[in-house]
Length: 276
Image (cartoon, rainbow, N blue to C red; front, top):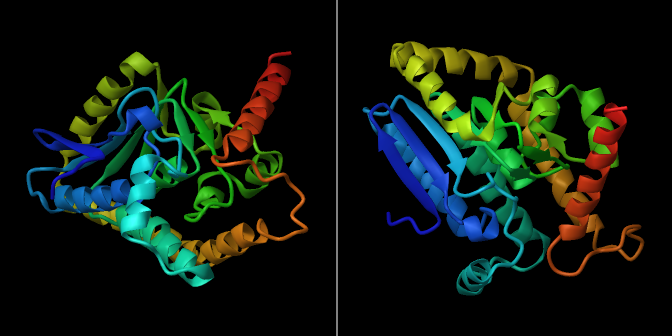
């Protein structure tokens, strides 16, 4: 498969997948997600690769879903989905639930290497990885998105506080909340991640696989996969509700930049109060 929106790099025992749309802050088109799904399974099947990293080209990990770039609109025109809620539900489930659950369960350790924006869909990809290493300038933003792993990433009461208000959390706070494993200066992030990945790769691949399976099974016994499936239906219902005449928020034209701007303002307000 010839990739046009991601890049694959291999260095000994480490395979790195790079989201490669920096001009769009690595927004996730359907093509990007299809390529990522193909590439992550190719690395999983590669017996030489023991650890998989995912990162973003340029200054950001991912600004989330592609809401209307020329590439995405052309793809939608060439491969239209079924009209109505049925088509939207099916496309959403395939791209954002089925793919992401598969990535969570590949039999090799995976690490998201996050810098800059990690918004909505970016959070979903990162949280499907086993570990998240972040730059201190990383900026995470969640909502009730399709792969709603957030209640497993952050204590539910704290998560409600953040989601009700809608605000970013930076890399330092994300580590305190348990979303992120380690935080480094941006210039050191990749080198430190690779050094850790090499130490992981020194271990036996079968033992690593069983460790991952045991931890994921613990979550699944508690209902993780069932929760993701149910929460996706709630997400679809929520987005359908935005079409109602009684919807209480002003729907921005085109891209959802006003939502992100409000979350950024709330983050700055929170940060300023914390510094007092």
